[in-house]
Length: 281
Ligand SMILES: [Zn+2]
Picture 1 (tube, rainbow, N blue to C red):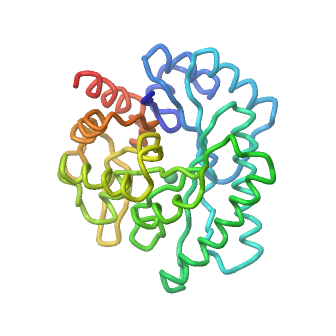
Picture 2 (picture 1 turned 135 degrees about the vertical axis):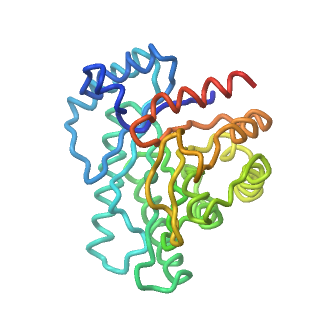
């Protein structure tokens, strides 16, 4: 089933006097939302006890819980000690995800830094192979890793690169961040046709199952020559992309993604705006 929800706690949540993730479950259920993404940002710092308590509360209210792995992951790194850090971030996130009782962990694939892009992609694919093998050995076959499309041109993770990453592995899903795709190509998404083209490309590359069940990040994002600058709210009318035509494509194609809204501060009400629009179709 398609799910809508915020990434992280929004301004309204704080304004209404809430401060703990555990309070999100009841609050989001009351608003009629379906999922919540918890970001580890700089590192996986949560105890098993707290994660299990939060997970129980989310289960009680039937709100799906996903996590975002720390931002420092770079699978294209040439340094072996950094590759070890990648594993710590990824498997620490998966362990916590298991405690939360969630199923999906999003990660940023990496950057070439000074390397040639194609060489960097080859390093990344090798390291990814390693990660997926370890994932199996460590008993995480029932959890999904989601490789995200990135907002800066310099980062690995345009649409085709994410398709290449996800292709060979049963438990690797694409996380399509439409704001990122729009920002890295300076406002390329104008409406229904561009969204449709992205979904068609995805389905050609990865098949119907991974397309139907993809993970989605959505926000409007300010961009410059090099791509993403900062996340905006749905009040933005300049940068986009607009969510309405995406909802139409998702509805027409009967897709069932989890959509995490990453608006700057208004992610919950913006997620609700998407859900309500989708339901009206
Ligand atoms: Zn992300």
